[in-house]
Length: 425
Ligand code: HEM
Picture (cartoon, rainbow, N blue to C red):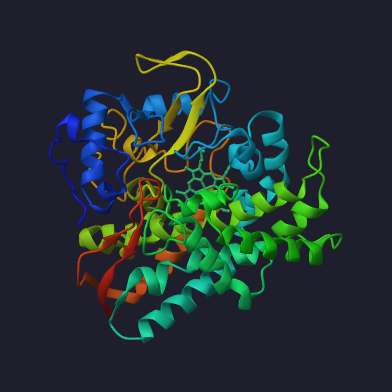
């Protein structure tokens, strides 16, 4: 289960952020981060070949500094650890790996669809979806896997709605999302990064062949929507010229569509599952929330801090520079460990205490300060709030029946199984 006190110290030479196996343990990542923040907050982490190694940035202030300065720390040389050559970068580039005026123009295409006001329009739909998901799961019996029955498919159903994907196609979207993001976990993977087979898919996002199916599907939707003036995300992408006057190429559209399918799926799923686990581990706070739903918006921020569904995103130095007292050379990878920043004791009082009334709560879960701040943050917040507003009044009690299982990944901080037993009100 999750710790409430600072984790046991770990010697610096035992830290290895490149080994995905370290991330299947509930405590080890937090112990590594703790050691790094204390002993070597901008740490040179070597990588197995062909990786070149990277700077691991683990303190809140340094993460915000690098994230807010895209001219020095660019996203255009890619945002995951993988080194991607120039040709494949161009083929795989999405909003996430674009900077400057083009990034602003591409982001503006959908910005209005993701404001707090715009997403509030989905609240009624979300409440209905949550109620249906919960009633179906709870009707199956008192013991079930919370991830599979409740958390897993909920976020993608919301995105499917926003993309205008018909309900009967949603299961395909779910399957693609799982196969693409979980590509370091053999339970999900089509292609394991680093294997020879993955070389065949170098030009695809996450090197996943499932991306081809997503592209084909996205293009079909686009063809049906073009010129229709609809308000769904696909219609906006195909009908609206970017503000810099440069039309989206077919590949731009493919990669944008794929980003939307994957970005809000696993992340929100894991936020929900981690929040549930935290509330199982802290029944007194669960009870408090149940009695006083006005605490929910603050609680959602603590769910997000606690869950930290994304361990890191990467930047690349565009020039020789300095960060946290270290000299960083042009071309070096600089990796922002948001999850570590969320336990920084100089920012969060007792960071290992889960507290639904924590305030202030300046977490880094969606990034912070820079142009790539999560586009879906308001949507994710709404999904979490609605989920727990609907769930808690139905639950008299909830217990774990076995240990949770974690996704094998140093990128997404995920739960793949959360076996529970519930007593209904
Ligand atoms: C960007 C996390 C939900 C869409 C990001 C970034 C983070 C993040 C950390 C910044 C990437 C960077 O700095 O390089 C999360 C978490 C979520 C979540 C933890 C759930 C709890 C969503 C949802 C959507 C979404 C629901 C909806 C489609 C995006 C997009 C970007 C992004 C499109 C790229 C923005 C840009 O590059 O300008 N997200 N996200 N996310 N997120 Fe989310």
